[in-house]
Length: 412
Image (tube, rainbow, N blue to C red; front, side, top):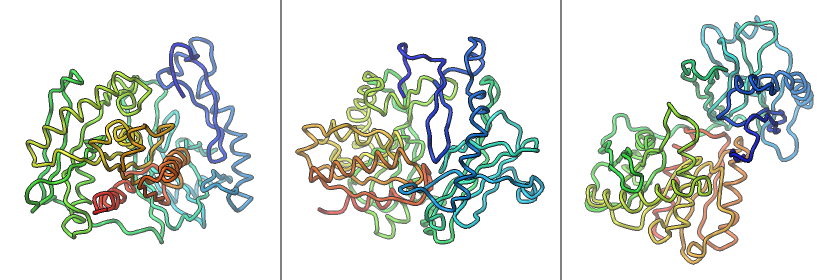
């Protein structure tokens, strides 16, 4: 959804996902502003939809299966609050499975509660309680799933202090094991700040160079560069084991400003079409400033490079290679929500390798990522597409990046 001067900023509308009708609106507008203008608020629409949503979820629970072509559906049945409190114990957050249904329970006082990681439904209040919130999801192949569950209360008044999400990782009995993790790292991890002419501002860059590597190495630019330490912990054992070629990770930090969440500067820099000036400036910064700097300082080859990222960062990796296939000849894009409508003329004639992956529980991201893979494959460009039983989840992104770089950097 685009927000701008030609749209009704106060409007509230709905969409359907996993069988639930979900209210949404311009995120830069508060419910207090809507109420002051005499307009329906998101909270009011949520309350209006709660009982119809419960009825549909109860019907889906009774159906004891998933609709054709769907991998996740919201289900519901009445619960005994005493049983739920016993299940929760003294923890704020818990999750458990019953057959193919994953139940999530959170306790706390809030105006609303949203899951914000591997699955992202809004929790419903438990009737007859003060502060119990729940969601139940029927999931195809639940036993193979890994799902990060993070419950984030969202205060109606945005001036209140934000909460840190309560978080856990739920793992099915047939889920893949965690990859080996290096803690502490043996390689070199450095934080830098570059003064950028293209951005007209300073920007953070995190660099990881693996241990024991001699001479120049291939480089990989990673969007959302503050995530480099987490990726390095799983990449290092794979490099030392020889399953991934040594590579230098150069993580360019995003433009998120917690004090000013809107407009979304990260999206403006990562997604072409949102703000052309910011997108172009960020790309010039990476290609004209970061890469030459890394090549001279860290012994990284001047080219070609890999571009990598997740979510909007994955969209940036694809877009960067579309515009500079002379520089980016490999792309690792995970959980991509927005992809180009067509390949650029340059990209059609340049064999850029793409490793694309998405989760079965992140419907829109999965669809977009798979469609881009199919488009590349129809064009005859080298592309590998993978799926996992999970959602929009850092656990899976960390599992996938070693596989991506192993395939992308392998000799043709």
